[in-house]
Image (cartoon, rainbow, N blue to C red; front, side, top):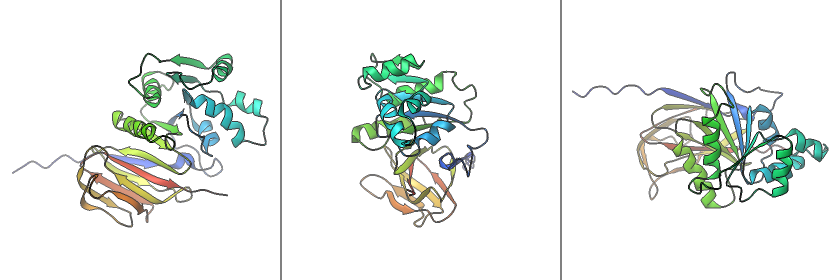
Amino acid sequence: MAPTPAPRPAMSHSSAFLLPSSSSVAPAGSAYALVVLNQRLPRFAPLLWDRAQVRVCADGGANRLFDGMPELLPGQDPDEVRARYKPDVIKGDMDSVRPEVMEYYSNLGTKIVDESHDQDTTDLHKCVTFVTENSLIADKSNLCILALGALGGRFDHEMGNINVLHLFPNNRIILLSDDCLIFLLPRAHTHSIHIERSIEGPHCGLIPIGVPSTSTITTGLQWNLDNTSMSFGGLISTSNMVVEEDVTVISDTDLIWTISLRHHS
């Protein structure tokens, strides 16, 4: 008789970090690192900046910060905004950041890490490695890396960013745009995803990238998966909808979870 497999450890997920400051604070014990990539800043960039303990610009992300943060705070003096929202580090192969932007932040004390010698990894990969290997955050046990501008723009850049999720499966990394967020659900865990209805949903998806899933089980969705197989060229769970406050997922392979973000006037 085959031995009973050991139960998988549970992993909980929440987007409470996106709740307005008036209604929530970052979950107790959480540590956030913010990575700004070279796409338009989402509307909630100032909120996440204030929640983060470490802020890193990936190469041309420094341009987006320099140009975009004053646009998100139109009632404030642009020079004061730029000085206040100063990254701790600019890191990457430095082929996109404008020289005057790099000089501006360098004069304010931002650390510049030029990795132009490394053309085998993406700028997001470089930034995640930097955050996870350096002591900018002493206790990394509850570290969550929030990547702004990781979705949209060139498709190959998007796929490179999604690949980073698979390269760092033991790290919590969330890719964000104005319209949605995505993160990895490692197969070694059972997953409980708490839905913050005021800011996210209802549209969602579960997508196996790279390896087919022969068995995925969910609860809390309009169209739940019941020991369902998923693969490219076959069924994948897109345009699904959350119908409960908590969604559970168990799968035999790593899955990408994505959920839409609500736009408020």
